[in-house]
Length: 113
Image (cartoon, rainbow, N blue to C red; front, side, top):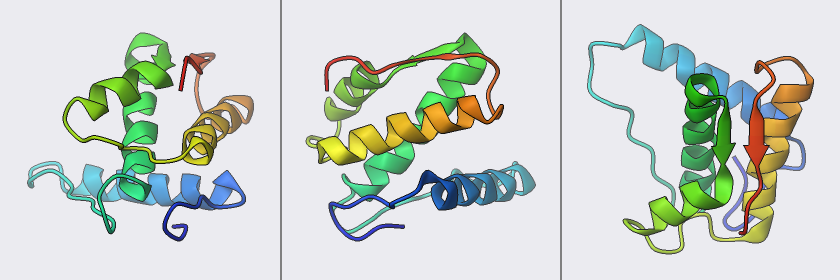
């Protein structure tokens, strides 16, 4: 994962990380939820949470509004997804997964960040 307040240059490593985490979660279906935390619990953790939540919404509802999700997260954890580049990275990651056929024709709404 990237350094504090930064994002990876390419989403591909992050997508592999997400895939790995998902495989572990599937293997541990009967165990407690996954716990994830970075230094402050709002930057890198926020990127992961926003991506994973968006993927679940896309798969279940066909769309995800990133700005609305961040707003909801911030009701419980102020400043989660700290920078515009982190927000943009999640959007670009999801768009890349869509264009490579990893998701079935969903809509990712950028919204007001």
